[in-house]
Amino acid sequence: MDITVVGGGIGGLACAVALVKAGLPVRVLERRSSLPDAGTALGMWPNALRALDYLELGDKIRQVGVAQAEAVFRRPDGLRLARIRPRNPVVLVSRGALTRLLLDALPHGVVKTGVEVSDVDDLLVDSRVVVGADGINSVVREACFGGAYGLRYAGYAAWRGIVDGGYGPSGEILGHGAKFGVTAVEGGRTNWYAAVWSPAGTRFADRDLPELHRIFGDWCDPVGRILAATDESDIIRHDLHYVAPRLRSYVRDRVALVGDAAHAMTPDLGQGACQALEDGAVLGRCLASISDTEEALRHYDSLRRKASQRVAATARQVGRLTMRPRMAFARNALLRTGGLLMR
Ligand SMILES: Cc1cc2nc3c(=O)[nH]c(=O)nc-3n(C[C@H](O)[C@H](O)[C@H](O)COP(=O)(O)OP(=O)(O)OC[C@H]3O[C@@H](n4cnc5c(N)ncnc54)[C@H](O)[C@@H]3O)c2cc1C
Image (cartoon, rainbow, N blue to C red; front, side):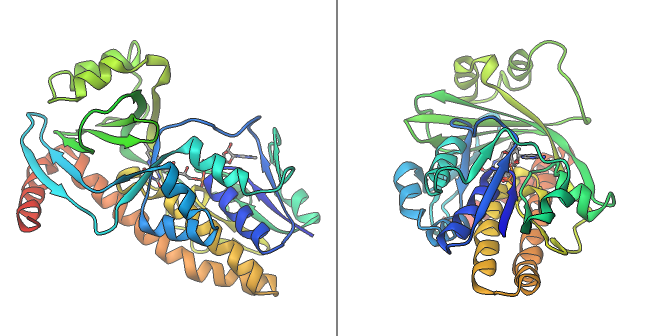
């Protein structure tokens, strides 16, 4: 019987590639009519690159993406707080390019678009396993893991966009309850994101761009130039949520969760998609190497649940430290001390 993956995002496609690589039959059901061929940048950390290497796509992503060797942290007045050079560079790649690479590694017909899943029991009738890879608002989590698990608002909202051209070094500018980040992305373009501490569901009266100009207008370069180059219709806005409480298991009977469905986290470590890639690759490997389905799923849970939940908890702590207005002084002091020590 097929393994049915619900959701053709990063986690679902990674799982499907791992299963196809092992010669197992798989179908991916995706509700959208087509998969994204654009989108803002995702940082691929070494853990994600290892998962992509396992899927035999690591070299391709390194070719397509842009390696980020350092990040500079500044205050809104331009004062440098720290410059951080990770031991291994992060590879920045747009969601569209990553999706295309994963999709190209699958035989034609594996991904069925325009199919919205609402009944998991139905799928279980003719599936060996159902993989819930259906993102933060997962219907598979809701149906099979119960209503005890929900989403909690992190206390801040984020805006993202991409503009043509380069705007200097990658990094973040950190203010009181607000931050603005800049990274390169393939094609000589620049990816930006902004986050603002705000009550859930705050809607700006008019459009996003004038409000972003109001909040960030007097911040140091290149914030003003990037906002001036941004088209209102290209801005993506999210209230940021995470899954709470932590799931006690990512597996129930013949159903397993991967990615945001299992552990949606705040984006403060840039790890959500990286963890989804790891989940997908590991679940595929477990199902390929252990013939007993229940044992394979148990093994997946033991390898991925605690590890991914630790990352989610750290992301939340980093989010509080960088975003809470009353933490700004302590955060800047920490970054300056850390930056001096790393020189
Ligand atoms: C502001 C921001 C910045 C981020 N930056 C980074 C970063 O730099 N690095 C990083 O690693 N991560 C980052 N992330 C996180 C990353 O975007 C997510 O963690 C990642 O996309 C999760 O992948 P997924 O496959 O689990 O879910 P998704 O990408 O959400 O995919 C789920 C798929 O399931 C489909 N689906 C949903 N319901 C159904 C249904 N009922 N039936 C069929 N299909 C369905 C959806 O259409 C979608 O295609 C960021 C997130 C945010 C909000």
